[in-house]
Length: 393
Image (cartoon, rainbow, N blue to C red):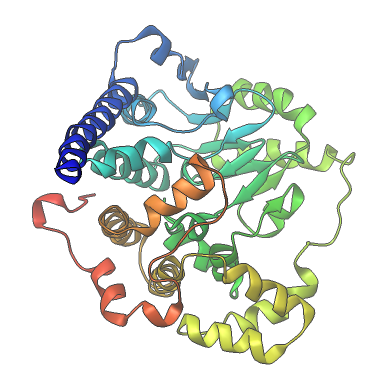
């Protein structure tokens, strides 16, 4: 009888726990989607200055992380500016000295995904539509990526015409460490960095800083941070800026940025090994290459990869190999399928728990080894969604 009473007691508690989780997601969804809240209005500032549009990400305490509300404000305004024949340029920047945009609001997305809330679908879909808008924009688009630029921040910048890094810029795509994959068009831009550099950055989550962000090809220019305000003013003063005029102004500021040492690319001495050892059609092949090389550097990379989600690594490698020959639009459609499969699987939730929630840095991946991730499972990740759920660009 006592055992039955315990079981009976558990059911209301479990129902209460589920109910609270759903309520938490509803509140989170309201915060992310409510269009008229004054506090929300300030999360992104949209200004028209003469013939230029300026987008300012204004969540400094959250490292300017991108949420659904911000996306829903930026997208229509960019469309409006693009359709205005008087508009000549759009510039995007972040508030504060720590971050341009440290990523998307992944915790909110995973909380929504746990209880089947539509936010988990909407966030990725609308974010990727915005990424495509940036990548196909008819006006010159200048991103001042001063500070942390990861995940969603990469999507807001890397597909634009100009990306200006500073000594404070920190770029990384660390998604394999949270059971995700380098999305926001990572399948498109990473394979185009040259050699196997993009595959290396995607699998290991290696962090590039300062001038190295430009040397890798992620940024188009480098300007030291104390010159950014003057650079912005110079760009806004251009009367009828063509891409070549904008490039000339940024180039002038780059040439003046001599306070920051111009050292050799941090990965220069490893590029040959990256191009050789990360040149594999499968993760098993890359692991074998690293094991057989046996150098200290190769062993370090192997140790890093062994901490990542085996499923994410296999999905990411295929994503980038296929992305080499796909358009940006094809990559984003592919990545939307992957995002939804991540929400239907386990590793994404576990990775966010371990890295962002509990912060024990000890995720329990399922499967826990490359051998456990079957070709059939990887195929499932890339399989089409029901037609009504597919991303349409």
